[in-house]
Length: 96
Image (tube, rainbow, N blue to C red):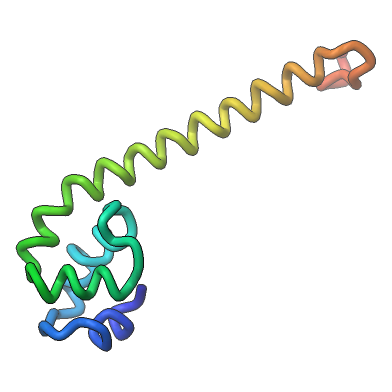
């Protein structure tokens, strides 16, 4: 969500800097921020401090998603290698 979208939805004022540093990462990763209106409503209810408190959970979700992406990439590489070893498969390289 862009700053302009957030300020159009939220009733409390917020600086663009605070939005980008605190609210945006929480909006992107915290499980409670299911959509733009919900994020704005949470901000209206609890303000910036609520989002500061939510930052740790959002950061953990972000880290877990990055780890899962890495594991999924590795799994795809392993599947490709296994397929290449199947009978009748083309060799992975010219040395074959």
